[in-house]
Image (tube, rainbow, N blue to C red; front, side, top):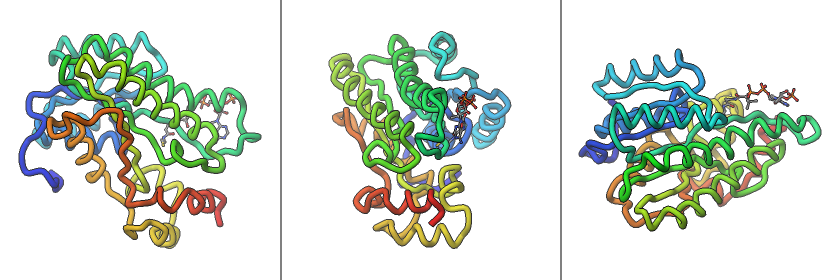
Length: 269
Ligand code: COA
């Protein structure tokens, strides 16, 4: 069990569905939710990856299952949410974390390449929220959409992700307004540079490049998956009962500095 700022179980009895839950930041959130006594359902494209993640969570004493579906497939999501409800009851938490990315200049990208990322990140987020809606606990359910710094500031070679994630934050705000009257909260988390993630491995492949990038973060370090997970716990807990439609940054102040340094890293400078 990893160390948490919270001493008590804040999500006892809750049911949480997490897309893209088989790895990275989303798996970190899943593990933390299980530690806080939520029953966790991981959704991903590859069953073997989900099985490995579920084995890890259950070995640590958590309750979890994995269901394979592609967030681009609305019908498949409908089946997954129906199965979750059948197994665990009404759904309290949905984390829309499934995402795809690759750095490419616009002229190095086909229309299909742009569409692939928009389909996963933006349409996938809408599909997940929409398919979940009829199964959500009302009032009380909480949705978190995982956004990105690219939603806030343009970044070279990221036209697809910038467009998709800005759209994700607008889904957050719109659904917060539309679903607020039913007692469903919707928020975004914007992770900053986070250690031990695929994104940072690509941006800072060597210890030297990582040290260089850290100097441009006001807190002078990368964040951790545990810190993001604790933010997700807070936003989904009763402690955040009056927070909806918020885009919450967990980035060590990186957004204050801007995206130029990351652009330089992508350009290999
Ligand atoms: N540069 C330019 N185009 C690229 C590319 C790259 N680095 N990588 C993929 N593409 C293009 C493909 O050529 C294809 O376009 P085409 O049909 O015109 O040839 C299009 O993108 C779709 O690729 P495909 O591999 O068929 O899509 P997919 O649905 O299997 O994969 C991706 C989606 C491309 C986003 C893939 O990177 C992915 O699944 N990533 C998931 C993991 C991930 O990105 N994690 C990081 C999250 S921050």
